[in-house]
Image (tube, rainbow, N blue to C red; front, side):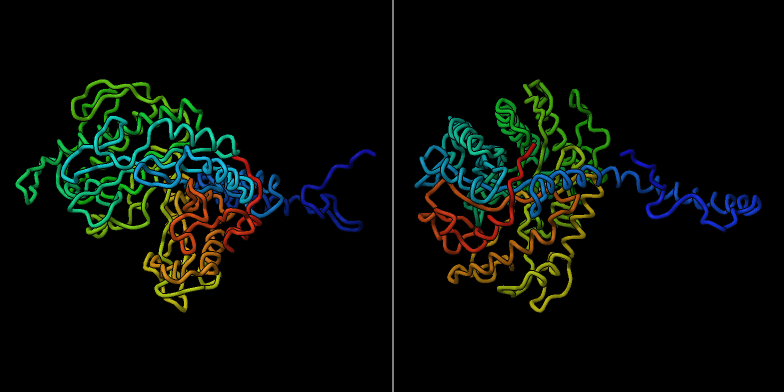
Length: 495
């Protein structure tokens, strides 16, 4: 049966109704005159909105594709988890027999499609540029051998997961109250490049020289694992995580305060538009990862690059630098980084405190907290998180990934200070539900990596009952959040 032409507007006809007089020529001319200014206004509005529409379109298309594939439920790109292991940990590991079993369980039972494999270098002294990560480095407590990471990559692929290597640096010495990335570069981070600072032991640090050498060492670290990612055809690579003290420029390091901190003479990559020395230094790291060769910052010596062709991510912390509120910047790390345009995704360590003193807070109140609205339990102090994330995504035209998010199955987990002696599976369930209900389906949000599962028998994992792990040895023995997640997520392969 032949199809008849459809009217221009559904439900109407371009022909006049029987008995209706067609409009006369004067009316048509008047209508045309009135229409012109309207069309001009619409054209101007369209020009203003077009870039945002073009940015949103791929995300909307991805959602449509995801919905068709999933049959509902999850539509975000990444349904992932973090799978950490370091050299100083015992009882498991990427080469253990349990590791591939846990990876298969995450893919099969919980419909995960990607896994972050952290690679941790050690910075043994905060007053020095040294990074330990080579297999021959004495005293490195964290970095595994390349063969261990290769095993994790191979097992993840066999399980149907996309493996993603993530670079981390842990700093730990007698001056550090805790082990982690927050004190990397902290000692010299607040000085101009021509300045110096002294330790209590009398050692003097020349800031510019130390920072350039640190970035050369870090670039060497990044290039090595970017090469591994390229060799294994890994489509994503996380170039750093929570390096708040050296990730963005401050009142002491921006181009106005410290113009001499920017080296405009690095062969092949003059930083002509740099907003500060940190902005230029991170663009240098990206250049080395992308290109077959690059020049070092300290000596301009030619080095082999990684020629990495996949998509790059950096994970910025939700908060500001430890011990130095906002590090001279007005916002936390993820809103202060100026070089997001140099990479492909904005990664966020999304461990935001949501309420001040709530426990087992219902999903509606937690969604309000994400949006900076009042709750009966107060707010966690991070402001309107939703709006801040949306604004930074729009500013740089990059989707946001929660490269880390997790909630302990313990009372008060949503405050960021869970009670480790009070197991509470309902708390974890509500917190995870609220996150997904708040962000799922948004075109600027590309998914979440839950923290964390480990290559250890789950029932033997330390403090499993109050940890952020959702998975048990079986689906039936998993926590309430895990059982819910297994039904919420649908198979959603990354392409």
